Length: 415
Ligand SMILES: Cc1cc2nc3c(=O)[nH]c(=O)nc-3n(C[C@H](O)[C@H](O)[C@H](O)COP(=O)(O)OP(=O)(O)OC[C@H]3O[C@@H](n4cnc5c(N)ncnc54)[C@H](O)[C@@H]3O)c2cc1C
Image 1 (cartoon, protein in one colour):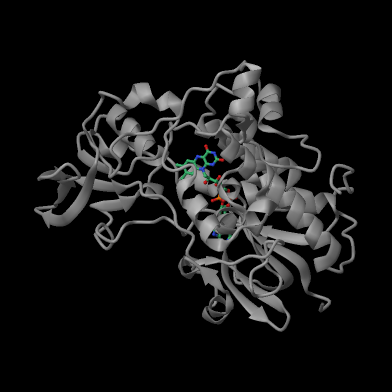
Image 2 (cartoon, rainbow, N blue to C red):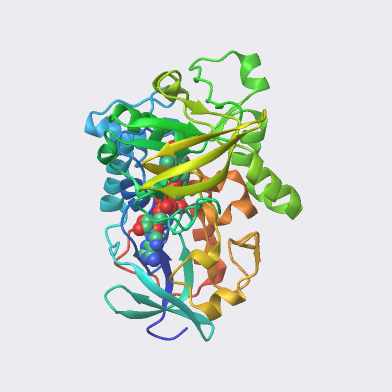
């Protein structure tokens, strides 16, 4: 390691980047972290939505679990329940921001513009033009850059077609006709909020029904708990296995892992959205988009019904709430040469059990690691497992470093 080379740089300051930073700080590993805190939640989700994950599954992770969402709400006098009390987006953003202020004060609110390989380490360039070197880099850029628009809707001007991530304030659609494409929580949340903001909404989805979550039951019988245990990803043994055994998941054959990540926990809005959606606006379910045409500044969608027949839907705007796909070619800061050396499956990096890709010292967390560790790492709940494991690896074997005397003392909770 060169004198000026940092042991670790973290790119990204969402739930994963901030949790990893809080654990590294407690371990006195010198590091720098870059990004806007909670940016995906603050700038790329619609105001007025609530989290789908229950309160107990919506915390960032610090070594002592000393600053959970529950603790934050208690100290701020805000309502909180482990289950059954939807967490408003604004409350979660305030919590994450306060977590950053208290536990990751050294966050640098700059973007990384370029990441390249140099020797056995990495060089990075920030948005202020600073160049730095690092031995290891953790890519925690989450869902940013990964918004997926299906080919039939791609390539249209943003005045007419956008991804759901483009919207926080839906007021500008008052009086307009908007088609929302998708059947998951993004689609349903946006459709409900648009309708409440005075837009004429049409929800279009291939699925024949919207699969709302069941409302949680606070006190469950022993039998119910045995048949379908609770987990941070919902009830049921499959979800429980996903939260409790991500390393076992990693051992499974690749085809199995990809199938589970695609199918388990498919599109499903929160239980609390049902009353704001059903009967409130037309839903074109069991319908796929056969064609898209722009006529006189409006978008005409040809919709094919699964049951047969077609119809046309004319809208001022189309919002593709069609999810996220972790394709590394979409990360604008990755140098071409480095990107070409990263082995991928289905466009996402192949990771070993240490979160490391085929280029040594380059670690991926969050959505980009889901094909390796399972659906757990698509959600904030996976930040605890990831931060504990990855920081032990970084502090233990992957690095030799001088402990940072200015960092927080090592916590007994990390080991
Ligand atoms: C509508 C919607 C609802 C959701 N609801 C839930 C829910 O209820 N519960 C749940 O657990 N999950 C939910 N999710 C999933 C959620 O996005 C992830 O759980 C969570 O954001 C993962 O955190 P992260 O830290 O990996 O990434 P993100 O939160 O996406 O954070 C990415 C960070 O990377 C930074 N960044 C990006 N590019 C750069 C760069 N070049 N340089 C520096 N920094 C950069 C950003 O500034 C940001 O700080 C939802 C997602 C959506 C879209």
